[in-house]
Length: 172
Image (cartoon, rainbow, N blue to C red; front, top):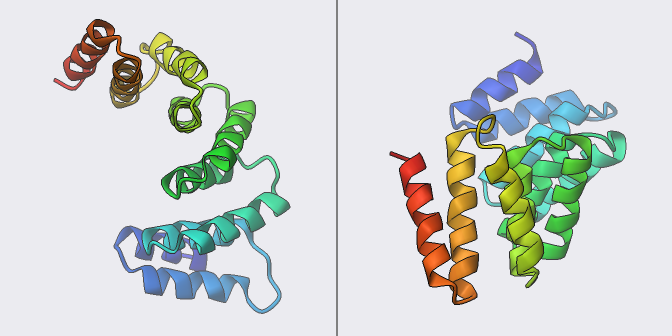
């Protein structure tokens, strides 16, 4: 098992300090390995070091500008840290690279909703729901849940209740 595989194993076991140390052995002093930087970003995220996580993922994207996973993970962290404009850009780029990624559609919809762009958010949620036959049920249920929350915020309570019912039915 190589150092990177050991680092992933340690991270999955919850040993983030050990995983970080293994990644640093891969990277330093001269080597620049995008996979290790990406993993360090995920480790920093797990440790709630969000700025550091974003920085690591930004380094990955400088080296690999078409890395959809790095854009997606960065979008998730930006959304969590309420950097909605940047999150929107990260999810939009993810979808340019992988148009069928339901979770990126959900992330983009959330960012747009927080930016007050409810109609655009609804459009992306409807795209997830339209793919209900190929996407995981949890993604579709979340789309219905978020759609219901948007309708609720707009005062369209009957549509909101219908969306909530569909979300519940998908999770039972």
